[in-house]
Figure 1: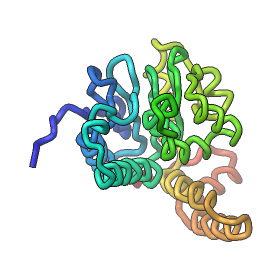
Figure 2: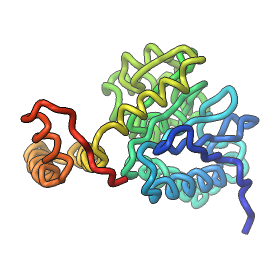
Figure 3: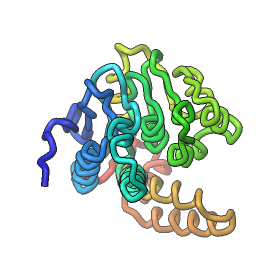
Length: 264
């Protein structure tokens, strides 16, 4: 078994409670080879289990955030079984981002194409440099970006998503905000601080409410409206039994700032 380079995904803690995972294959535009996805999967799994971690930031080194799958690796192995394993591995990694208890923020400093754009779409929040660009460009090479379409269609309007998928055209960061792919576009020099500011806002909220809320948000999206309301009502009832919710309501009644318990 080959040993993966330990620095393909670099983990650090820019603030207490924030785990930043940095894709670190700049020479290959952080392409998602099978080994790169293995490294990122391990980093996400470790962050998910870290009780001190309140927010995960997914960043990248170099000019590109992520150029999608490694096309050289894919073209070198024209085998159906290989492609099935590769896309199953990618889907598992994308679903991990959504299933993690912590909110995940994409910090997009450069281009995000194909599966890289998919990765942005699967993060809970995304902040990009105003010079960043986004595309699902597989169509240029005869490949409809089927797996990226799953995340894209859950962020953008259907016709907006289809236009990106059928043309492969880039959109800039302001357009990505307008279409709903990212939350904010900021000057490149302000990007890292903007992400940390957003992280701090989240960490000021009760951890139980944030984690229950994230899980409920994605679960209800896949349900019919009646089942969604049933699940949401049950979640709110359980959330109300949490000590922080009781404290929050008591603080409101007493016109004071709530004091959250430290159960991170």
